[in-house]
Image (cartoon, rainbow, N blue to C red; front, top):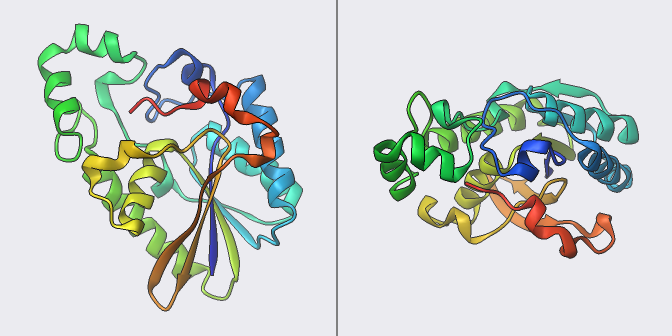
Length: 214
């Protein structure tokens, strides 16, 4: 089975460097264009099912991909973004100013420490892996499926697949609207493509706008 992992398109909070987490922030105009471009790319890939986060930015991205692929949509809340608790809606600097002790602990060890009322990256990774196991079983008769989710979730999930420690998940980027591909065969998962953004033409001029802030 090939699994096409797609990050949702850009939102205003992405552009403003605000922690979104589980806040339901919609795509902006650029994000809609990115989702349409990802859909056009995916329309050539013979995707049979699309599993997606239920947060609106991912659900709308998935909807546009489904329209292009003519594939059914399957809501999968286990693929929702990491909950950042009281940091949600804040920038990095605002979180440090408002919660100095908590933010210092969190950013020193995101793997094990959760923001106030939030999830740690290890919590997120475990949730993402359980959900991936579940959808693979659900789609066991499919050859190609897509998962539309979020930057932090996809980074911790792909880190586990390639054997990177969670402390290193910031070493690679998952851009808005990007496609990463994993082959799953006989219980073994193998990364085939990481962060493909070639469907945007020359996307590298705007990389800072789509870089993940966690």
